[in-house]
Image 1 (cartoon, rainbow, N blue to C red):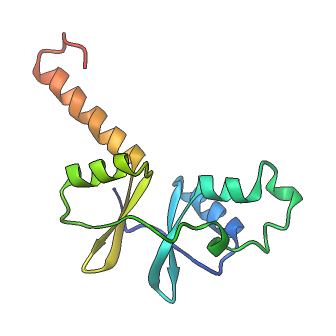
Image 2: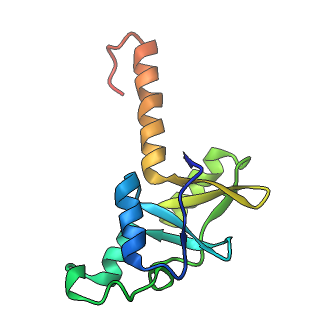
Image 3: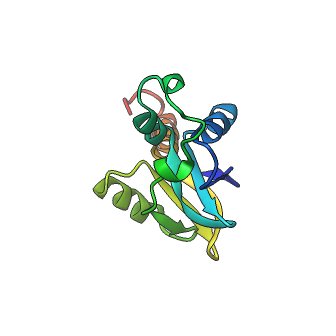
Length: 134
């Protein structure tokens, strides 16, 4: 999970969201409206909206609200990881917004899941003496 994630306002231009993602090397941004969680926007959503060549279009006028996903998967920080992973797999989701007491605390992505699973497998190989394939 990426703790204390950056967020972007619904009225911000998608170019602002894209710049924030690039600057912090992230691909998902929670979207807020008046300080409250309103959805999530991914780099992929922006690419799909703007097309292959965003410079050709009026991307400074396109707002985050046009690219964001409003029906966001939100989980409490205490939700079991296996439940989160099963839900994400069943619904083909690339991210979950993590909250604590209804406040944003992080973003969990498929990349996070893969990274931690790889660490788990490496630990299993190390414990077995390193001769077994993971």
